[in-house]
Image (cartoon, rainbow over all chains, first blue to last red; front, side, top):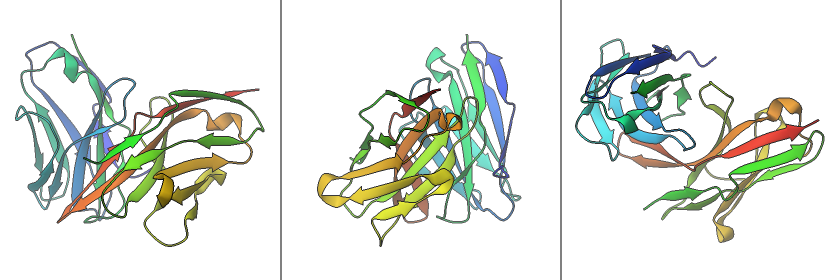
Amino acid sequence: ETGVTQSPTHLIKTRGQQVTLRCSSQSGHNTVSWYQQALGQGPQFIFQYYREEENGRGNFPPRFSGLQFPNYSSELNVNALELDDSALYLCASSWDTGELFFGEGSRLTVL
Amino acid sequence: AQSVTQPDIHITVSEGASLELRCNYSYGATPYLFWYVQSPGQGLQLLLKYFSGDTLVQGIKGFEAEFKRSQSSFNLRKPSVHWSDAAEYFCAVGEYGGATNKLIFGTGTLLAVQP
């Protein structure tokens, strides 16, 4: 148990829809990162939020966006879903640039 | 660009046998290196990490890894594998810039353990 919780655990959407995934950070952590893990692949960095601002982004289009709230919880939003967005989405929290603690992920299927 | 290569997609070992999972990295500076394990349907659990100092790093669950700068490698080892070690293993290099810390992962090695 890392103390990082994600919801929902599984969801199914259709192409073109929008989805919001949620993450509750471990107590005391002020930084949240999101990763996408496609089937058979390693996780890929989407972006990171520090004190409610995005401070790093991977090679993902603008339809991937996020928020971090004052309590350091976070949301990942994906608009105009595509089939290739089907993946496990992992949230990780940390204190500043310290060790990342991962949640169990939200598995998104796009039909 | 930084990258991590795990040459073995799938490995099968017998319970009680020794294990070595390979990891090679490409990174311009001194790397921060990690090994994570992922059980089916689970998130990532940190096994061990290397930042500096002793190149042989001890981790949880009896795992160790050795950093070899000359070979750009960070191989994971365990002297005696247990059935519960069956999982997917990911090597990663940490990229730190300003207030950002991100991990670049390899594609993983799936470990099966035969009784």
